[in-house]
Image 1 (cartoon, rainbow, N blue to C red):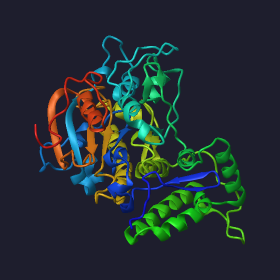
Image 2: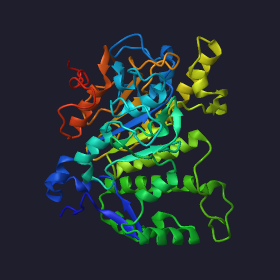
Image 3: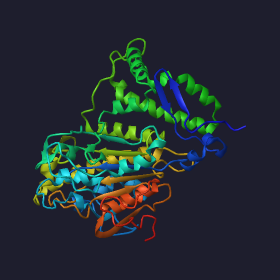
Image 4: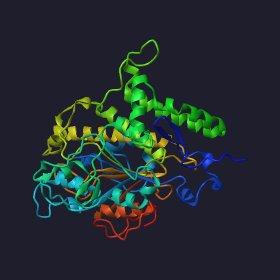
Length: 453
């Protein structure tokens, strides 16, 4: 008799809830509700933003179609060439000045997921549009524990003057629940981990966390009995999947704690508790955040995610790759060969971080035989094209993932310059099951993603 496992089966322990990935044993239609069958496995979408535009000469391929040559910036994701499309010609009109003068960086972030032109103010009277992630989450997000997740590497701000009279709310938030309600992003991977694996009441997680820290325990220690019981009942292929998943959870937790660098007592536990805060090393910080995003998608805790590498106009230096000057400063290269080399290095560094995320998604095999990457739509790009010109047409946009078979990948697709970026978003929303006549400044659904105009 087939094993009866609900799609919503959880491993439970003291104040701890560990969601599970999709098992083959859950795939029998007799064991799923009609709603669960429709999303088995579900389609996910994610949006990744990089600031200050690109060194476009190193980004845009010269040829179209499947035979295009990878440019220097895209070499970092060469391994996943057949899993993404480069989209050229898309435009973010809402990020343009429209008589408001300077502030392209703040506008580019505020408009990136909304398609709106934000009101120029550094006061409390902010006004923007609603972002695609939140519009979609409002309609389909109830199917998951978290309707959406907003993450990043630099903290959000809700006030202050960050760019030529534009509020810091615009510069540091790309997700907007309402015209006056930016959604702050979480930058602490430990906090995201606790959200994903916390219990269902407000008191239990605090008690469990206190107990974990006291005895230096993993969240998996609390659900071990449940995990062992489930493991014994699963068929061999699902046992391997469970083992791989639990290993990845413990591996992430170990890296959060820094277990490999801690001194251990004779009892085999670290002699001081898990450190607070975030990693200073951007590469390690981003990898942990991408691990969190992968776990959230793998366990169907959320299907809609957004991620900002840094805030608008970031002038962070990158000494780890030999760039001592600031990012924003380098993007205003004025044809300086040295600054162009700097911006190209920074662009490649971000793409290398993106490659890590793609690798994590491609390692997760789902019950339909496809990878998590194949069952996703992941937008990577910026609301500024050439950082020196501050233009918002011909944007650097990449779409990774096959959209559960909806997207023909491995191509460079050139659209007529001026095509609204929101045309892509309208298409994505509808693929997710959200109903909309239009979005932002869209004129129609984007074409060509399935290989047919």
